[in-house]
Length: 209
Image (cartoon, rainbow, N blue to C red; front, side):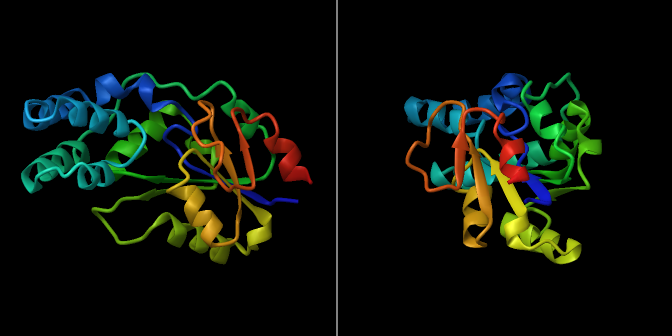
């Protein structure tokens, strides 16, 4: 039986696509101005990846110049999102499970915490952690270990829920923690996780095993 759920935020609790055009409008314009003329396809792919992964990772993968990377980081580190936001309807399936929950998300602290506020989910969690590469060298793996150490959870008592096989799912697997990959678009059929589904309907049964 599990004692705790550790959740990701972006594309796990709510779809980034629902706010991307508004949130990233200025950043997308900056990318178009710097990459668009040289490689329109790369610019479009980079913008799509930004709805799924942290800016720094996308910037490195697509070879953003140092100037473009710094401009983008400065832009994102100073914004808050203050428009209406809504979680996936099925997030309520997780919200109702009566065990401890922690939120662990990667990104810029001010921006990520503004999303938590607009989603009105802060009260669902025992604690919210933002892994901000600009503020420390800690990783999600470090935070998972910290949560277990400070709360006395064993790895067998933890379930990590997320959408990214290369982020929170990878960190959990490395620690021997069970994983639930939320994959509504069926992007990762061959990923080696403990559980994978397009919905959260089975999580309560998994937790109570």
